[in-house]
Image (tube, rainbow, N blue to C red; front, side, top):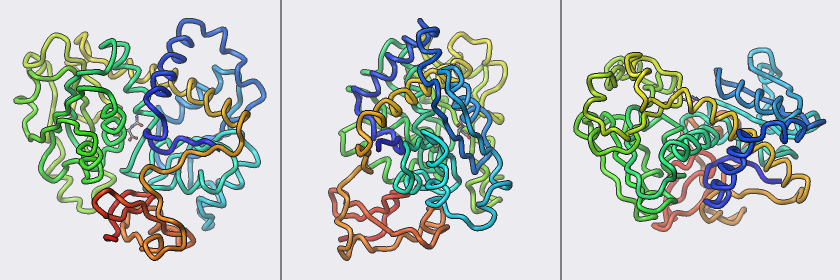
Length: 366
Ligand code: NCD
């Protein structure tokens, strides 16, 4: 069974194919109005969400399907101690496809390994958020006409901002893309994201200055400082408000520099930017719904054709039962820390580093 856990579960051809389907849905919505008649999407959200959950639900309704929604984990059996794995098994009996958001990295992968229907990762802690990336890609495609050769600035909380990790992983696969990573020292992108860029020979630079980077960018991706992921409240207080994009700073950007943001914004984009024709963050919201429609169609179609097909986590899985596969993940932000029943597994990077398959943090060396 094919799930979408990480954006690299989809090939470049598949990403382009999803963009094409989304554009066709925009052009001919009536042709898709019954495409999922009789099918049910379950939305399981163990973390707050406005647009992602409603976007999935609107997508399923516009395909003629139905929705089972769990938006408040406080009212579910999770409060009685039910594991993600059991929850996925149970929901698989009711729904044809699951969209899940959870505060721990790797939770969606656990659900995909246990459930018997496709699982879509709608955000797993600070780890990744592949369907926001689909929204971002369609927006870039529509505004810039493609991805090759673009210089993309990522600004704000690059450590905990899961949308950043997924977008870098996706765009790294197009040719000539460069990244300018703009963040305070403490909020630089995690090492596994850097490694993925280096492995593909992607050009990137890290800077703390938005002003210095702005004139060189084709797209600027602003992000919120992720208050809920900080262990140290004082550190958050110190770093919040690090970057504010306003109409004055936009004068430094080129005429073709689009501004993206996954939303919600706090104060990192001033409302005086909203009227700028380069501001595309509300277009992203709409594009996200169309891409989720395209994704639901694709995964349900594949599930119907090949019930055994399943996406594997990126990297070389270490054979189960080997000493390395039993190496324990100690990341407190990983689903392994939250649920004792999870069998710890690792993948091996080229340099011999073993990484937890759920959160991608290192667990040791071979
Ligand atoms: C993002 C998320 O949840 O990671 N929001 C979204 O899904 N559109 C970004 C954020 O919360 O800052």
